[in-house]
Image (cartoon, rainbow, N blue to C red):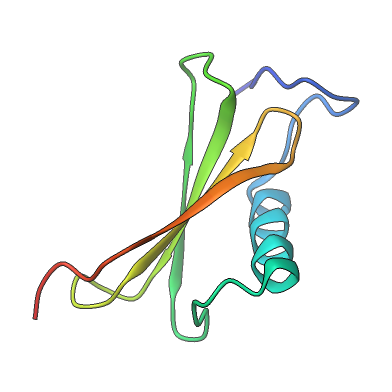
Length: 86
């Protein structure tokens, strides 16, 4: 799959998107514990400024962290979604 980006890179692997998100979380000291979480990456193919949304979570009874990465490879924002049950 080809994703339109706005930088020197033509695209990013899942590993690179994960690393971008994790580096941001560490650098910004986002209050979210990554240990024991699973990662999901959603690629935006609608041409929006967001290239990917990286989610970290450990189930519906726990909060989820969403990290939005722009087409320039930089994090645009993060959101901590409250737990959804239990």
